[in-house]
Length: 104
Image (tube, rainbow, N blue to C red; front, top):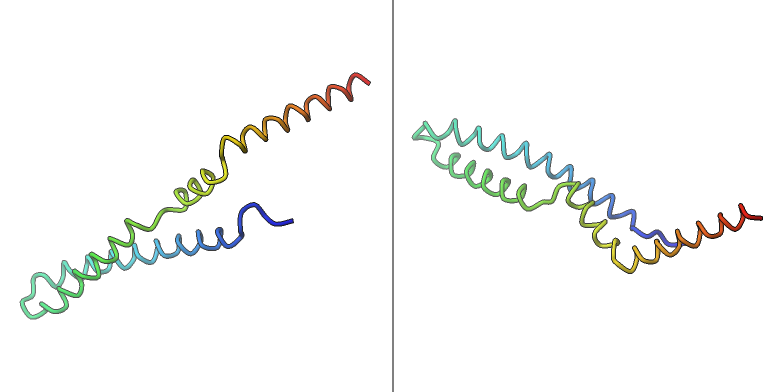
């Protein structure tokens, strides 16, 4: 039997979570570098590099979805009116079988 949700999706979610942590570290480090190189006239190149790294890491951090967001998107993909109705019908049928078994 094939799984409903591919296990690779959970692996990808874990990788995204690690990427967020790494980008957070890079962003903080680059903002510190921007702060410390801003005051010095000699470090203009390092200042520009630190600014670029800060902007890129912040942008990537904003656009990489969180673990909760990915899980919500995954659930939203599988929870459809047809699936809800099918589940409801299965539950009603199961309850009817139980009540018939109790009557006997």
